[in-house]
Image (cartoon, rainbow over all chains, first blue to last red; front, side, top):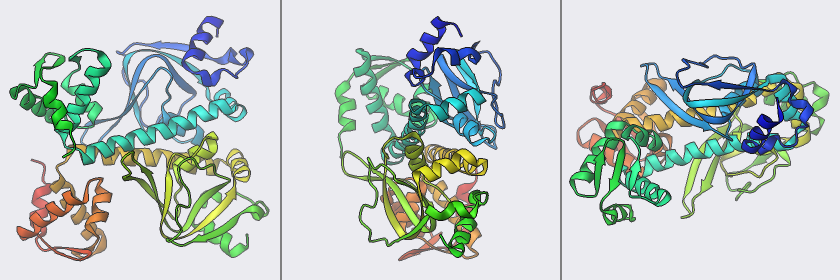
Length: 223
Length: 223
């Protein structure tokens, strides 16, 4: 892999900094558009370890009733922990992949990757920290889903998004908000409409605008 | 470790069957009663990999407000995936351990364990399959918490418990039921009391008896 592309990879994944330049000969970059159908499905055996350098993929499973459950998303600088478990444990992949935004992906042949894992503590640390982070993130989401009523969670989400984005107009669909909060779109839409009727929000296609931040802050107060 | 104890370990963890008897010299067994206070806390660096041969431990985190969040439980034949991530990634442990039932634990010095991991595919498969199973279990729980109303989840749980236990009297506390369903005890108690008022259940200390299974089955029908 040429130097310019390698530098791009190292910027996204500093865990690879210890790998000497000559070891990158077998690494490749691949671009995949969002229209790529079923790039990887349950039961897949990986020939390469994949690292997202640009774009975003979604990891999901399909239920017996045919509904998709999103497990998590993987973007620049992250890794798919279920892919790692499949590669390192030499077992089939237990999920499927969809491409959400055109991705540039680093491909490392599995034997190269496992040699690097064995030789470099920085890479091991990164991979296992990703396991821990993902597990804790899912658990925290579970905690928040289980213990807080939906209006509280939506109010907190919107206030946080407005504060991080410097605007009371938040560009997000009801679908995306539902996925981020781990609930059904209908539940989100119903709650948002109630808040809009009470003058707290105004809703338009793809955008939620906070009209009365005090209303949302009050909802978020512990009872 | 003497042969009898080793056989007990191998019965709980067939993944160790490939390890030759002479390699077990540095393995130890330890018994810990439930009264053991704070055996392992966040920030811990493991000197040994632990495998539960009898009993059960609970893995939890403490929130900023001092409330404990149970992440999962580990019993005979299972492993704590966050401990594995800490050992294999050479990073501090991100959780705490409480002993729920007196445990007999196999202790393997970390260098012995990582050598075994490198040498034996059966052990690697087991550990990484545990990562996958735990991640999918948490996600499925999240799915069920997010998308099904609480009475449906409780009805399904009780019918399943009665069917697996061959009795309509299910020995479980409201607290334990809440933990298994990932919700608050008050929510469980409120729902159970409503079901009891409507003649579906009778409640006594530590036992829930299904009086009218048809009522529960009806709740579980898709709308």
